[in-house]
Length: 504
Image (cartoon, rainbow, N blue to C red; front, side, top):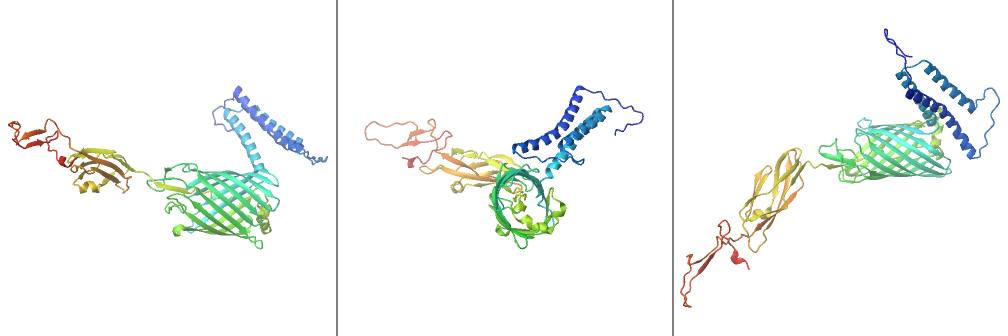
């Protein structure tokens, strides 16, 4: 019903061509949809040469045609009443969306009511937190006595991350003897945009379930909000599981799982307990007083003494099954045999286990090569390209250069090297490496440069040949007079060039 304010006249709605088309199109869909629903099973039965039973002629019999006629009449009556009231645009929009939503909800509820399994899992750890609690649902898409194609979805919040899991699977049943199946999932972290792909296999018999799962990351490194200056991504891993029940006491069950993940810093037991290639063995016992409820207690033991203890409460609701049956203790045994566990959920780790690595918060660079003459003081060319928390200091290593009399001096990002003397006939190459540290103690990757000390170059202008220290050479040409000649070798700066006598 529409309510109008006092003193204002409600304007009449003027029909536009577009509005009429939308309204009548929606009404047509609502009318034709029941026809399609009715038509589908009839055609399916005809394809299978099924014999349709005759309908009773009594007054209480309701035929499919009568249902369709009632639906058509109902929709037409509603539409006629609505259009005759000359509604405004908002009312038209609400009418259209309301009809569509109501019909969609009806169809979905009818479909879900036929089959399916829903499980609400509430876990309480030793700190009485509800982490790893979840909601999971399984629905068969195609179901025959020997084969079933299904979809399974889950939503849960683990380690302060909201995650979703959606997958498809196929199960093949060999009578009531055994079942073998495969499945694949896409796991997505809604909080941090991590994505992982899962593949699995199942093998079931009465009172026994075996399964194996593999987890492969599908997204890369992202900044971690959990650990400062760290990045995170999904870790690759796998697990194998076994679950069994006692035929004499089907209320009691036990499960065993081994899991392995790979990476230098993997948080299998949480972000603060990162390990390299961690693994864990988990054991759990369960007690099911009625099919609807299951109590569990489990313990996980990992490498280096890491462990975790959990207590849980599961609500396993089968959609479409009477509640009285789900509260009947005699129905528990039925759930433990293969025929009764047909719609049980795939058992896997829905939580995306993360791998961590240290972010590069400080980065420096040095030139590949530095050349100079002995005694020169040259810049080391240090470049600080990244320093998130500022530059505190730089540590240098050059043991051979320092042993020959060289020096490294400076501060901040300005550093110089004083070269040792040139050593004729010897190795004049020296390695210098550096590591920078920021104000929070983070270290950069070690960088290195090579220092080469070149031999002194002679200058023709400053090189002189003298006779007894005299620049002019005068001697008698008698074949007997001898005087010493002195060759003074100097470089371009007038400095003596030494060590030449040792060279070949």
